Image (cartoon, rainbow, N blue to C red; front, side, top):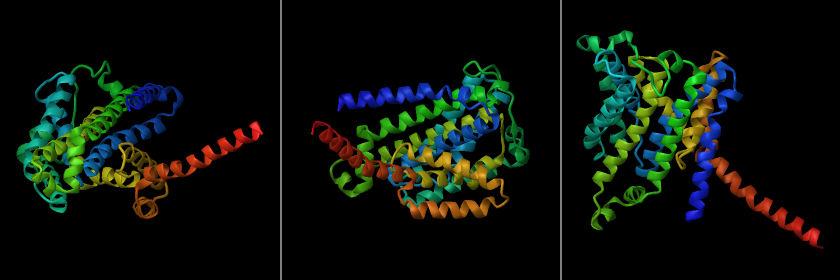
Length: 334
């Protein structure tokens, strides 16, 4: 088992290193920007997909943890005058603290009430940002334009807005989130979560605390999603109440369903497919119609998502390839 994990870790690090070279291969600013949008959406989709896989909980209000850290980044930079690195930490810490406080209330609920409660959180935050009293902090309906102090990982505000220079930030953030999701899922913590999802009553009778692990899972998933919100704010240097709207979170939910939540990389594949589809369908003038048809077809044809289909196809073709190899060796020996 240890050699297998070592090989997986080496392969992951190799992919992370090779991915940094993408801007040198994909030189189109438009397509590189489109790919970055897919990566950022993938970060959020991985977070909610992980929560669904481990706990069976769907976060309808995912926009709360996309918009909140984006606003906190702007507040930290504009009003508190924090260095950009400190502003990023402030945004992630504030969003995570909010997730812990909100999660202490909502994770006790069953899956459907949980989904609606998280949606209510997002709508509550959206309404709060539009209050006249909050306008000095959030910019109200006009949104908040950010002025960053200093650099982030050596990148100025202008550089963060350019796809080629922003790519390493988005790519490494995605790799960190994927590693976080995989390690958490394969730890004892992940085993407890899956056992609780399978039979919570039995886990309680066995002496396990089922509340705290589920709360920690919600906080961890919200932290992953918050990274997507920070990435969006760093790249655009702007945030508006739309970032807290259900439609914003709906993109990541649909992406997660398209890719499938059975694996850590499924939501990422779904995010890339969804982003590509939005660009292709938007050029026709029938974005909503074609998106709806495509989502229905994908979910109906591939109940386990696109990644589930890829995995099933791989398992079907693998024995065939092995059989052919053995047959070829037999023919050579004969």
